[in-house]
Image (cartoon, rainbow, N blue to C red; front, side, top):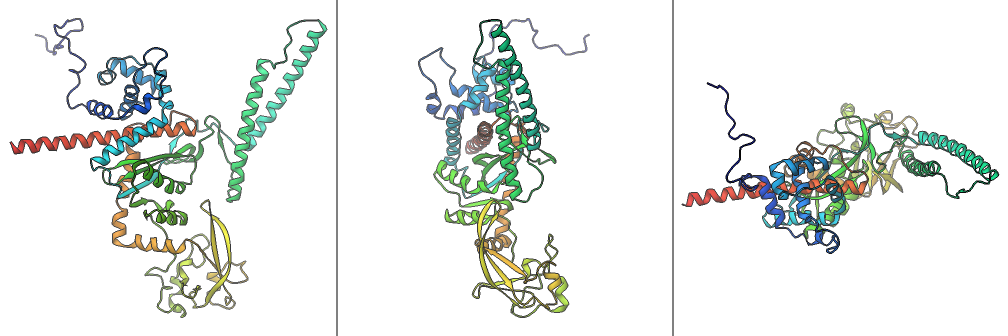
Length: 525
């Protein structure tokens, strides 16, 4: 007696009624719902990109887009793997209805339809809005790091680029001399076939020199910006994808990266706006992202929940002007409850016994700005000794990449003050200075709101919604490094990923609602 189980059907066994592709996909399989949703969308904008008359009949764009989007939800991003799946995996075969699609078709399609893809993203969002899954009461905004399609060590500084240009110039001069000698020899021998065009090798070197010169100009501009910001280390330019930028990785170290953004509706974690930046300054995306939501979905979010990087004065002002309430951690420069500088009468000095408890600035090791109380009615600050710091001048400074108007206040009674050594730098001779920028009043109001129980409860919603999208796209979709190069192509690739994420969320919600409806029917019966 044979111990091992028999195969239900041998490889060479024929069947009287062969199963169809549809029979092989279960009724509850996710691919069915994805196909149902995409078939309900309008594909007119996609169809308009085709000629409509020339060549063989093309595969409908819905079919190819479906494969790319479904592949993402299954962690399949490579065009070669998608081609294989369409020939060998039953769910992909069902989705393409038995078609064979070449990997080059997927490659070209992925970058060709950015504008129609944005329209599809909007359609999916509006379906979710109609179902009450997107409410735009509270949205989060956050960014992550995704590696560029550029090796970690494939970067060059301005110094290295200059060395390569110098070596290339020497090589060009040598080849030109050899070419001239060959031409002279040919003329002396009355040979025909001389050409005014550069030989192939020389032309390639000239092209390479042009690219290196452009790269040098770009890295020199980056060095100038870094020097202005006080950064001494030279900029590094990625050579494979020059649009990317060397930034800190989330897991540690530095590499050429991009910063993808996602704004997520808190109610059901749908992405409502996306973008990609090539800079470490993430706060500049706040206002454009909110404007994009308003334009795409016809409704402005009521509240924006974002981390401390977004709490710049300009963001606070511009979001308030657009009726968007910002919830973002920001340091208050007003004395806290446990700060001895907090007192009813600021003209009175802090008791001598409590002077050692006054907070110090971690960078300067001197008394922190929170030790000084601003009195708006008098337009003065009061120091811990109860002395006035009066307005001296207004100047403009660059902070977080933005130019702001700053009012400067100076104390004129620092000489002989018992707190002078703890308050002023050793090089200071004209009294302690305190600056107050044009946005400080609104930042103080934001800090007070964030310190309230209600403010903290609202902000706590950010931690799940703001991170779940990146977790799924990186872990489930496998998007930890972009396949494409160049900022615009990377933006398109990120839009594909976020559209696939929203489709996956919508599938889950529709399946949940249908299951609830079935339970209600059974209960009623």
